[in-house]
Image (cartoon, rainbow, N blue to C red):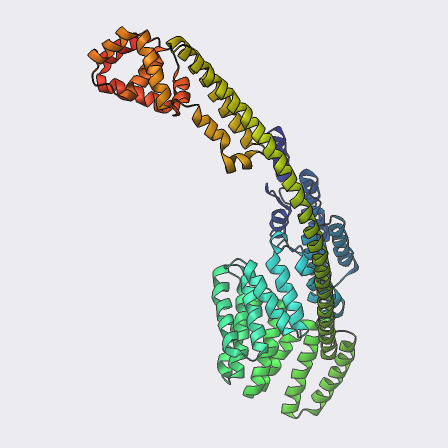
Length: 578
């Protein structure tokens, strides 16, 4: 209790000290702590000092909770923030990502390791370094079967990001598998679900299944309005515009793209704004509106020129500019556009050309094929080993079974002999007790001694039966029931009762005659309880002799009381010893 009080006090102190910093509630798992911290990510622009001050409390929380995974999430969030500050891949972010991965491996935490490797791969992918991201995503794809996604932070985001990567290199099958897997872990009404549905829509669009794609884009549109994700809403409208464009409804496509641009510009999504303007320019060209197309493509060109990782977008812009120049028969602009395309194609050979993406796709397919062959070979070797091991085990078990059978039979015989001897000893005690009664005079004193000895035998025999149940002799007793039979033989038989009754009447003739006179309604069963009670036997002793429970004796006395009336019963009880 003191430990928890100290912990709550410490947490409260942190929350007061770091009022303008990241916070952590009282959570009891690394996964929930990491997810809680990530939800508080903030963009500090280029102010990395403010970023570090904001994240510093995580280091203190790591000590309070003794949770090494919080040091990993600190590296991850700092790397992320620095990447946003530079808006480009940088050595500092790379170093932090690799540091976080090393820590997760050192901690032997597969779920955190998987999460961090996907994050690092997606960082490279997000800045269009597809070649560097490629081996990382291949590694996590093979690593995924070893991971419990329920224990991994934000599994829906990790799997979705894997889907994005494999979709980019043209592996549509893997992309759709991962998107559907991510969908299982995403909250139905969340921004992550919107992005997953959008990804599925794009996957079906690439396969020319526009009906299914359109259905997904409409779902994204509706869900984005619910979650307030207006950038995603703009993207959903832009994706619908692509379908209308393909169907020849150019006006509808333009209207949706203009609406997409409004949302993208209003909520600061520069890349989506650029994509929407590029697409809008293409639709305008098909409409023959070259001035509008030129204006749109010029708006799009404002963003990618300063971003090395957007060379492919810059190339697409140059292609649109070339198309406009060709339509206008503007030789000078056409020449400039073609020169620019040549330069961009040369740059993309070192960056992310279509040919390079296709090569990566082939390499991924090859790696998958090799991996499957290795798995098949491993499976075959495992099955072969299992069969051999099974054969050896069967032979050993057979030999062991035969040995155990003979050993068991031998032990069983020994136990039966011991059991028989024990039962015989108890039977002899009973015989001697009965013989002693037969040799004595048929008087109540002898019977009283005999009955008390009987009680002692019965009590001991009951204990013996319970003890046997806990030993290896229990099976023999269950099979033969000799001890139980011996117990029942100790009970008062009709013959013993008649002898006892005769001796009792001789000893207490007046008592007996008064009973018959005052209580003519008494049965033979009532007399047994009365006679035994007269001898001073307790309920437990009476129950042992008659072979009934103690409760049954009590109930029999209650019935007798009810039968003869309470006052008469009190008179009768006063004439008994107890």
